[in-house]
Amino acid sequence: MNINNILKKNFFLKNVFILSSATFISYILYLISLPVLSRLYSPNDFGIYGTLISISSLLVLISSLRYETAIPLTKNLNEAFKLFVLSFLILFFFIILLFTIYFLSYFFLPNLESQIFLNNNIYLIISFVFLSGSYVIINFFLLRLKDFKFLAKIKMLEFFFRFMFQILLVSLNYIGLFIGYLISLIIPIVLFFHKHIYSKKKKYLVKNLKTIGLKYKIYPKFSTLESIVNELGNYLPTIFFLPFFGSSYAGYYFFS
Image (tube, rainbow, N blue to C red):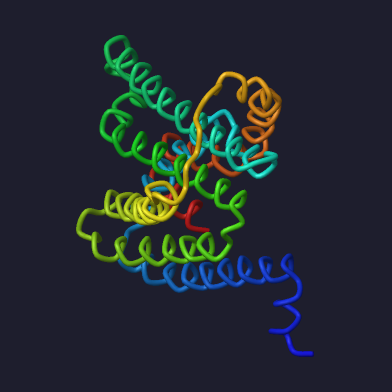
């Protein structure tokens, strides 16, 4: 019995194979991109880029209060869609909250060094939080839909377009790295909404979002804090390297 026959008979193994193959190809693309990008961009560029990505990624962890992680566990698709909508609503209000905090700090702490850094890059950070938060929600919804082929497809597209646009935007320095990443998130999001949400064949009911939020309240209560604690070790060093050691050292650390 060859591998094709085994995969056809076993739904679980087939999906594992699809996702693992996509992950493998994506990381091959990523490994190919690293030596190319390291010759196009300076350590300073990677230092600022890495700091912005680290700050943004920490914010993404709490942007939807982890409700998206409950989507694959729902009993039916309508409940899953309600959690999908709820996650996006929380993300939207989180973006408003970020803008509010930023403008308050801008008026009360205008000369703080960290505030100046945020002033120059706030729209990049908030754009990343919105797009990356959306991308994460979509990934969990695709898991619930069991559309593993499409999930694998957008994963590979995200890595490919990130690499391509980061090369094309090299003249923008660290902003080119960041915008290249943002564009690579936009493309899978647009493809997802075109296929799954705008289709006339699929109809979902959106009612009682408060009820569904209370039903899965354990996720924001426990999973949010747990995810932040787990990821602090990954992101905090790069954030602290920039003010204390400079962007070059932050770049070397982030790149490694």
